[in-house]
Image 1 (cartoon, rainbow, N blue to C red):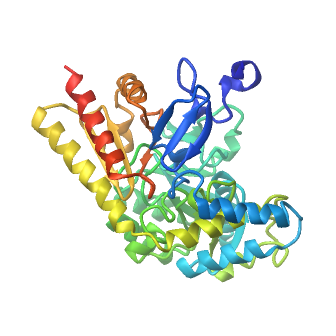
Image 2 (image 1 turned 90 degrees about the vertical axis):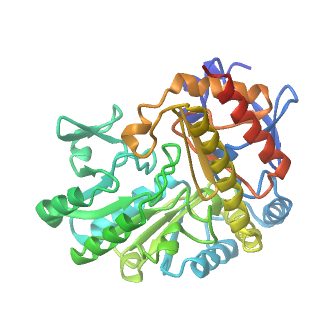
Amino acid sequence: MDFQEIFPGGVNSPVRRYDPHPLIIKKARGPRIMDISGRWFTDYCLAFGPMILGHSDPAVRDEVIRQIDDAVLTGTPTLPELNLAREIKEAIPHMEKIRFANSGSEAVLHSLRVARAFSGRKKVLKFNGCYHGANDYSLVRNSDGSVIPSSPGIPGEVSSTVILSEYGDRTGVERIIREKGYEIGAVIIEPVMANVGVIPPDPEFLIFLREICSENDIPLIMDEVITGFRMRYGTYSQMLGVKPDLTVLSKIVGGGFPLSAFGGRKEIMDIISPEGPVYVAGTFSGNPVSCAAGFATLKELKKKDYNLLNRMVEEISEDIVSYITSSGKRYSFNSFGTMFQLFFSPEASSYSSILRSDRDLYMKFFRFMLERGIYVEPSQTETNFLSFSHSDEDINALRDSIKTFLRSLK
């Protein structure tokens, strides 16, 4: 079974790759995944976030089977689209109108197009370390004071329409908007930096960002692809009382199926075709099977105690941080909500500090955990997640295994 000969790097997304080759997973149930050799692992990757109920949740599975019996794809409006959209809008009222897509990358791309069209300006302000998918406007970096593509194949003309700033840097944002605000058609940010491991948010900065965007008539886009329904029934923005102009969702709202959504102020969304001139389309957008899975997932999440799950992660974090501090080791353990990550760096409070983490040592940690039947993220710059299917025994095993690995280090 030679994946390497068929797929570039042997995978269909680069974050799945690790040497000598990634596990090939055959089955997943609850908090566990099973490889083709029949070995089970307790899973904290959770498909990079979506499986907050655990794998193959019975209510979601039953709803998907019912929908497949009715129809898989029709190319017409279907009731599952309406059911899911109503559920999202009830949970997040500032998403006054919604358009479905198929991935976070796709929904971000659409939201940027819509925001630029609405504002009549072409530039986008984004923040280092905030990931917004594998699209040309997200894959950029600073180089000698200029913004350039971070991947071959992206025209420099595209990256030249992106302005980069640092998360939390009010002075920098004020300067950029003072000098270039008349060109900026959208500001986009992950309210919680959740795709570089996890960095706890700066609530005051996000409130400031809302205020300065409003003062300058710049649409603010909150990318809650990871954080939507992850730490509460709704978004992190709502916890702050911040209303973005547009919100992007994916991961959890698809219940494990390909689905994303973006939405926000009615006057902005109304410029989307066929009602308006901004073209946004997709054959699989609003796929009834994905929408049925998402609807079933949200119905189940309504019954769940997010506070309990958040507290479990807090307790793990406090214990690991206490051990690191008392042992004098120069590592970091970050957590927020139901997300956590261990960094082999004395500081992990910013994107630049995370880039200095020891990735080779992290891979030793990853393999150590695999040997103990625990599957964590295969990358230092990804985030681990807790699900409602994990038990106290699972959590204790995770905590003990992390401390055992740390104790083994000189």
